[in-house]
Every structure is written in structure tokens, then in C-alpha cells.
Length: 400
Image 1 (cartoon, rainbow, N blue to C red):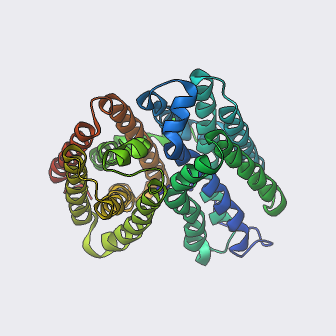
Image 2: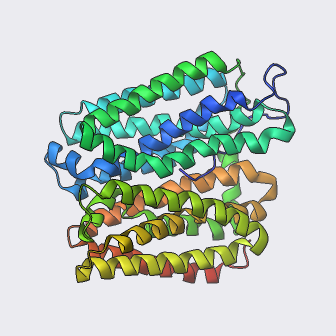
């Protein structure tokens, strides 16, 4: 995933003397890859999972909504509750929780059992991802901290590109249950790697949740943060249902994996390009261009689905554009929030991550409501929401 882990609550002033290179962060990057894959993989085999559990695709997709809600709510709470827990123990425990949750989902006999397992998985993800970024920055010399964070974020970025197509491919070769079992195995391997490689790091002083949320009292933060929610609702609302959306534009089992991979290529490219462009041109301009691209992309998708245009090159281009116009938002929004509260960088980036997941939850819920009416209607609604983002951006453009 493209939201950047934040160094919330960890004193990164001095790296352990025995660990001054980037090598120790690679295992954390594999861990964030596992977490990101866990978050995205369900979209790749949604129809098969829905059929197996005897629910509709719209209902099955609400497992993504639940995951996002639990993550958004618990990330700041867990940061407070677990502040004093030694970091290595916390990371290993979070990965083992993820492994057990994915194993439970793989063995789920029915839909309620699956939902419980996905909620537990979100608990593990909310405990691991922010702390992985914090620990990575503490393992290296000050001059290497940005690169260490980039390595860890790289795991999430690669998961964005590969998680869904890998899940789709595994479901074709094996089953959707086997795909979740493989994610569980990857989490166990990562836990073993963290145990073997990470030095013992102490916990941190506990920061009250009230203090963590104090940044919400700043007018700039309050003005900027809702755009993350609306933007992710517009762009991500139908991604959990990407396979049925692709079927509406003529994609079949032989092509859907590659089309999902193209979304990931667009996501990685958009994220990297937006970060660079926001530094040079300013975040508001980047966001404006991105939301126009998102609205046009989803509108073209809606037209193709409604008109029965089954031309795979067009579907491929739309998937690249969809990925790019979804994940361009995070770097620019984070830059705006940091500018609004420069002395609370870690907190506002963490709040942005929670807002991102709230947007995913709302968007997926909206997608689940509209998909039974038809993919063209659902896509058109998301395109309209992208235009709402433009209007909101215009109204808050001075907050950056």
C-alpha cells in the first residue's frame, strides 16, 4: 500500500551501534509486503470466494470494508496501548496475529467466520505497519533514515502492484483458500526473520491518545484531512470489485490477471511521480491534475461498461490510469498536512493513514451498494465523487 508508515512514538535519535546499515530493514520490507498483500489479495479472487461462501460479490467485498474500518480506528489506539512493549516483540506478535488471521480466513466455513478473521488481520496490520517504519528509521544512521523508510515503504508499494494479481493467479492455479494460506505462511516467515535479524529495542514512553489527536484541532489539518477520505472513497470504491468490473468491459479469466497487474504498475508510477511533482509544482496543482484524471478514467470506464465496448487495449490503459490516479494522492496530501502542522509530522502522517483507510471503507461500502445495480452506475458514481474532490480541493487550496 502507498500510505507511508509513520514514526509515531519512537525515539529515533540514536540508532543502535551494531546496526548501522540498510540490510536490517529488508526483513521489515518483506513484512510490509506481506501486510500489503493481505490487505489487497481478496480483490483478486472475490468472485470465487463469494461463490464458495454462498454470498454475492457485493457482500463478499464488505470484508475489505471491515478490514479498512478496523485498521483506521485501531492504528492510533494500538500505538498508545502498545507504546511500552519492546519493538521486536511487538512486530513479531503482529505478524503472528496476521498469520493466524489469514489461516482462519482460509479455513472459514462461512461468511461470518471470514469477517471475524479479516477483522483480526486488520488488528495485526495496524500494529505492524506504523511500527515497521519507526523501527526502520531507528536501525540506521541519521543520514540513512529516509532511505530506510523508502525500503520499508517499498514493500507496501510492491504489494500494491502485485498483491491482487498474485491472489488472482493463485486462485486460478490452486484455490482462494490456498492463496490466503500462502499469505499466512509468508507472515510466519517474516516473523522468523524479524526474530533473527532485529536487535532488541525497548518500548517508548506512552503518549496519551488525547495528545496524539491534538493535531485535529489545527484548522489546516481539519481542512485538508477530509480530502483523503473523499479521494480514496472515489478512487478505491470499486477496486475491491475489480474482477467483476473487468468482466463488464470484456476481460475474462485469461486476461484479468494481467489487467490487475497493470493497475499495480500505474499505482507505483503514480505514487512516485506525484511525490516528485508535488515537491516541484506544489501539492494542490498535482492533486487537481490527478482528480481530473481520475474523473475522466472512471467516466470512460463507465461508458465502456455501459456501451459494451470490449477492447482489451482500452481496458489496459484504463487500469494503468486508475492505479495512477488512485495512488497519486497520498504524497501530495501528506505534504499538505506536514505544511499545516510541521512540528507534528509523525502524528499527521499517521492521521492521514487512518483517513485513507476510512475512505477505503466508505468507498468499498458504496461500491457494494451500487454494484448490484450495475458496474456502469457504480463507476459513474465514483467519477462524480472525483469531481466532488476537485470542488473540495478548490475550497481548501490555501491550506497547504
